[in-house]
Image (cartoon, rainbow, N blue to C red):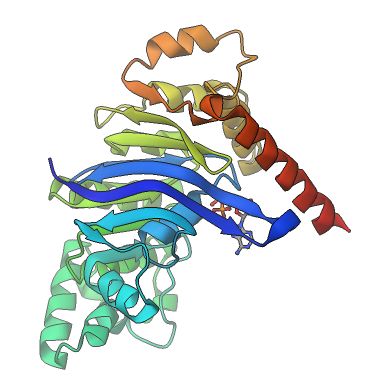
Amino acid sequence: MSSLIELKEVSRLYGFGDATTVALDEVDLTINKGEFIAVMGPSGSGKSTLMNIIGLLDRPTYGNYKLAGQNVSKLRPGRAAKIRRDRIGFIFQSYNLLPKLSILENVAMPLLYKGMGQTRRLKQSASILETVGLFDRQYFMPRQLSNGQQQRAAIARALVNNPSLIIADEPTGNLDSAASLLVMELLSEIHRDGNTVLMVTHNPELTRYASRVVYMRDGSIVYDEETPIGKVPAMAKRIMYFMPKKTEEDELAGVSALLKTIPGGKSADPAYPAYRQAGRSGRPVGKKARKPQKAAAKRTTKKRTEKVAKR
Ligand code: ADP
């Protein structure tokens, strides 16, 4: 399989001097064409930063990023925008549809930027809307659609360009379970058609749609697990059952607590050896273990940053 995305020692730093935050810490990640990757990790672990860099909305401070064989680490903004338009489709938690345009016009937007004529643009958009089950809603305004329908329209907009990569950031975060199921089935279908999907989620249940799950903590990938589609992988299952969860915050706390048990995080969890056996297909990424001094220095920097922020 050929690789679509290759990140080599990619770091993203925010701020300067004492107030530096290391949002991504020398991340290595290769994604092959046709993979469906779920990215999990507690809040602040670097998921959005990683998505922004892969989606060419941001550039690494250090390191190399190759997209479809092309080095895109240091592109000028105009060039990055063009590649983004041609190759990447974004789906956000909050749909981001333009309220004053019809669903059809919203979906056709990326083609307008591309300079396609109106007739072709609308025809192509109507055909994509049919794929997502919204053909009969094409002349509606976004506010006339349910949340689930709006998200399906946003998916149509992400697909209309025929991108090589779909980036979905918590695509079901605002949806009830029935609408979530529809959206996930749609993403699954897109994946089955041979597309590459990269999805951030806090919901371990959704990892069953993925072919691989990547877990992040403190700006690093700490675990990387291939998984048969249809199954929640071992590590995500543990996140689900690690502690009782009632609110989203509890859920995040669960993810946080569990990720602390991953190699490199020096497990205090007595169940840890059992998980290691169960997660045989997974790959702990023990970078922190190799670089204890750097990790300690980073923690000090973070503490300092927090202190400064509190003042
Ligand atoms: P996640 O998506 O997992 O919640 P983020 O990628 O948003 O994590 O953030 C990773 C780290 O980088 C956090 O410590 C966050 O505070 C910091 N960060 C993100 N964006 C900025 C920014 N624009 N300026 C300063 N720090 C940032």
